[in-house]
Length: 263
Image 1 (tube, one colour):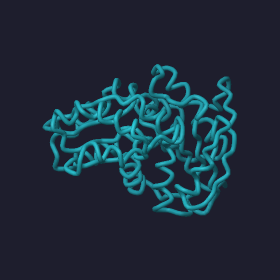
Image 2: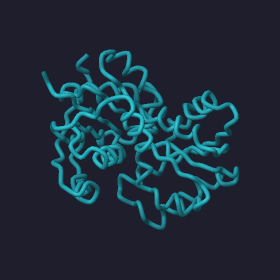
Image 3: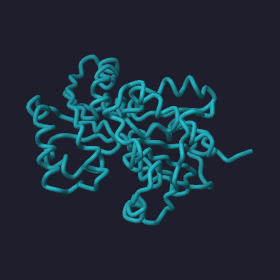
Image 4: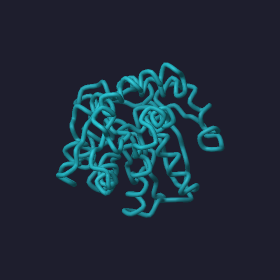
């Protein structure tokens, strides 16, 4: 019998924030990661395309031995989580949205800001679920379409990035938000600039921490197996591994055949 293994995917490197949180808590966690860097970002794609890509990503992970699927992408979680659960009824599927909603609804703050990709914000999924969790909550959202490309380019501490962040976050600050959901797994990599813009008076909730809290309640994290990284584009992302994880990983090339999703 194969060892249990987490299969984690994202449109690019943002999902590595989930891997980082995973390894901080479970250094021996067994996982395979797929970053669809050839087709990033997902946030400007149509719902049908997002679902198609998510199906292909999940199928690749299953062929690599994944026994649990983790959607480390808010955009894919917004549109494809239920499709993946229907496609893989015998495999647990975790998304990053509901854990963040549950964490936000449990906080004392009543005015919650949400930032994400165009597709995530257009879906209205955070607002809908927050109202369902607590009808008294007031939620305001803003799309930040340039954040993912800035992270992918490594522009996490450039003056231009702060300028863009101030433009994106101004409408939320004008609404006097008390907390802010980072509704994209890329956004924790911009934590410092976001904190500078919103100030210390706004609580910031990131998806990776909420997701790992939820997963630890729902299953025993598999440990003692392999830890593999795959990307769909030849890239330089291996340079991040030692800085982010304290040790190197081998960045392998993933070839995804859209004609065969393996289901």
